[in-house]
Length: 325
Image (tube, rainbow, N blue to C red; front, side, top):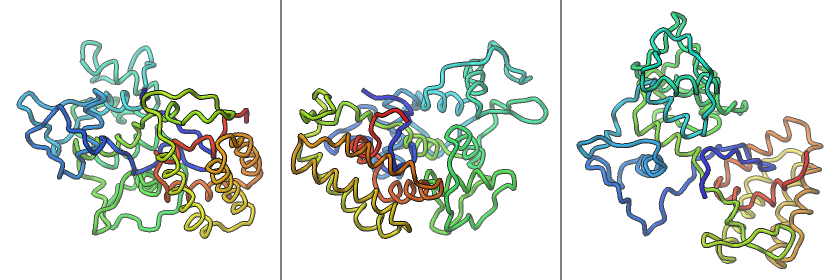
């Protein structure tokens, strides 16, 4: 089962922020083929992720036009589908959005979700092409990205009103600078760029992939269940990152103690599948709640940037147990 924009409540990762996802297994070939898009394209996986979710389609001539631009009306429809927004406000004050317009309902949904405000003259400009910095503002409005250190700001122009949004998107590793440290903020966003970015918010629901252990989780297996070997490989990757780069970049002994607790919890589970990992995770979480806000955010940041979200999602019960908080 898949869910659009599943907010991942892990103990030490930031919700939905990652550059890592696998659109297809290695032996899968897309049934939908576009004449202007092959596996060598940098956004190939992101595009097909949205295509197979039914969020975006190609053109009647069999092309996708990855370098084509995207209108504001098109974008709100795509964004609503990616993030699962369906509630809509009753009316709109935009003078250029009429009930008979195909995008009318999606604009109402976008306004209800709070990520579209329109222009000072009271218009929405549905046929206007979205810029990269406007796209950043929308992403930030939806996700409420936290303030993280930005080591390298854009070397090129960013509109003054958009600086904070662009910086947060960059710091949270949702979009990136090019090899010359340019962001091209005022340029129009391409279909490929939009797909590649939004695909990061479409994740495979790992809830049913966690193997039944006979312990306290009580989850049943299904056809998509991970093998024990696969689970251990994921654990080994995460344990390695936690015990090296993550713990070496933490400042306080309290932070390091929590990371060590999580590491030891996974090791104990590997040694004995009946180990009560949920109880151990709850105990680590209680320690986490006692950290200062800055210590918690630093902990989140260090773990998130050094691990794939898919790995952390599969191991979520070791990080953030399902307890009342």
